[in-house]
Length: 174
Image (cartoon, rainbow, N blue to C red; front, side):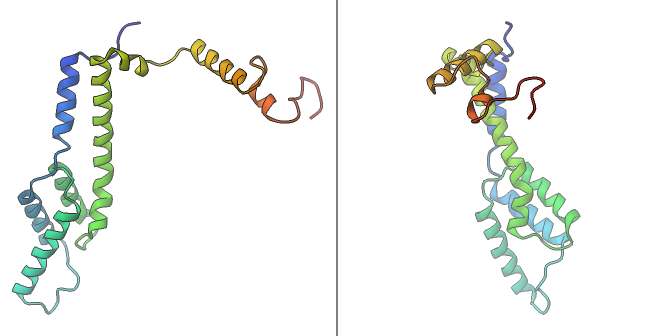
């Protein structure tokens, strides 16, 4: 059976690229994106506040957003800050931004884990065996062995053995 795995060099490049795209965004980049987002969304509760008070509140708010959402890459931040004003006229809460960004980060993390598994399968021959799909014969042999291990007849259907009454035969009343 021909190998469906990429070359070692391709696997190394793919894993490295995905690892790069998991790097958290630079704090200055996030500050700029949040400040831009603040410009295009409404902020409840700022009526009657002076400019210095609004400035201080914005700095504190950006600091908390950075602290709580520090693990997200720059491109995910950029997407979320561009998308948020399309979804609501209000400046988003931390939970709202995180709900937008989390699925994208999780998808990327899954892709990176898979790339690492593929790289491992290429560089570690023992791991390669674990990644190959089993044949129907192998699955049937495993099922027969499991049935025998648990005191069941390997030749009878599992469903029939798990329930007290046997399966009705063809033409028999239920």
